[in-house]
Amino acid sequence: MTPSSLESLIEALRCLPGVGPKSAQRMAYYLLQRDRQGAKRLAESLENALQALRLCLRCNTFTEAEICARCASPKRDPALLCVVETPVDMNMMEQSHAYSGLYYVLMGRLSPLDGIGPRELKLDRLLARVDDGVVREVILATNYTNEGEATAHYLSELLRSRGIAVSRIARGVPVGGELEYVDSGTLAQAVRERRPLAD
Image: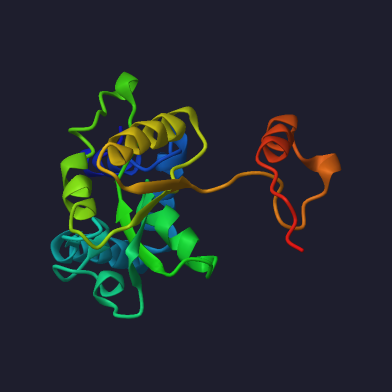
């Protein structure tokens, strides 16, 4: 019979995305058998993160201060606001080194089937941010999933009604990609969103 504390650990690990009962069991046994120090460090780090992290008052990402370092930076262009679904998406945008404006993190996307609507995403906070008189363009960088597209469409209608310029990140053939290996949907979108070449 499995001890209740072990059962509790296995069940807790199942909250991670993509972790089923067997994966959770393997992780729990690994941590207890082979890396008790790692398990302790994991528990302490998780506890510390839960205590120290909050949401930035301006961009809604995780921070230890009221305003995150990115929002406080004078080097960022405050007239540009990029809306992303998650902090991970924001980090990916930053790694591109192609954007120097500010962000707003939705912490999700519209998904009526999952009970996530505008109220759950706290879109009133985004609108308050956009109405600050500084933001001139909002770039929608939600994912190209059904929910991400619905979120982008909803936000574009909402923002345009307030007189804000709205753009959407492009999609198409990846840099270094060969047409032979690109799926037909991506290729069709790349053709539809083609641009004229500069002289």
